Amino acid sequence: MEENLLGYLLQAEDAETLRHVENYLTAHPEAQQRLELLRRALEPLAADADGNAPPELWVKALGRIAEFQCRALPFAPAPLSTPLQPRQWFRRADAVVAAAVLLVAVGLGLGGLTKIWHQHGIVACQNNLASFYRGMHFYSEHHNGEFPKVEAEPPRNLAGMIIPILHDAGSTSPEMSVTCPANGHRPPTNQSVQELAELQVQRPALFNRTMPSLLGCYAYNLGYYEPAPAGASQLCGLRIDASTSKEWVPLMADRPPFQESVFSSVGNSPNHGGRGQNVLFLDGRARFLIDRGSGFGDDIYLNRNGRIAAGVSCDDAVLGASWASPAPHVPE
Image (cartoon, rainbow, N blue to C red):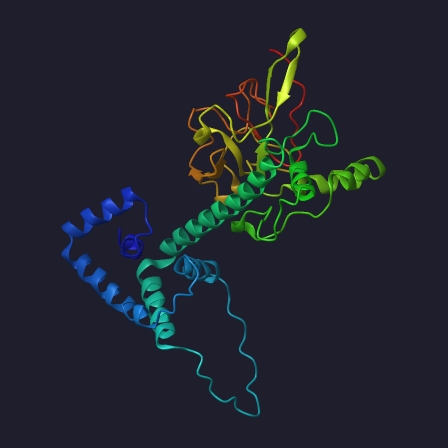
């Protein structure tokens, strides 16, 4: 429980963890003393605050510590013949932050820092998914309420094609990343649907190598089939005005397990160490789920027939990685 003291002090833990910490503090007076020492160490920050610090700066700082904790230090360079003049870079707040971080690092150990680093990756990924939602919302406003749709026929029959679709609509932005921020940053491609369609015909081998990277570390909704006249089935996409419970309809998420461009039918996304996946829902909120269920208990990466394909009904949501296709619905 000691590793949660900083999160408790900054109110950065979930409600259940905060409750456990409070119970721990009640039962352990010595922990209250350590918490008070940590609070006093952080008090000088308020005096030097300039109001311009980015949100979650503390999470990013501790995340960087966790990232480099185990890296070997490089050899020191040879001393210069002319000594450098000292530079007054640090304000008082900087020195206090450094001391507080060192105190916390020693107290928490590598395990606590690793936990904070993973939490930082989850939050950064949720913010990235939110930027995608803004782009998709903009797209829907100019396409009669429809979100980008993966079609049944080429060239828009692969999930990754939503990226050039958004690009053609002017809905992408540099802050978007098709790589989960836990794994780095890579902005969406600036290729158009037409350019990729020509590449598919003229240079199919290059197209096949390009396609898996379009949607990167994420998966997108493949749509669903619904009955149509004459016994056929019609592939439908999602709409912003959907009548279903939008808070449980997944639109986009971390990509599921994969190996050499092949889906696995089990396991959480590797983006966050297999602990779970961030899922962006139709209402615009991103949540971290510890399993592959969406709230209804069904697998968000497989349809009810156990296939990587479009849903078999409007309440059967399936998210596919860049190379996934809705595929024709074949009744069981």
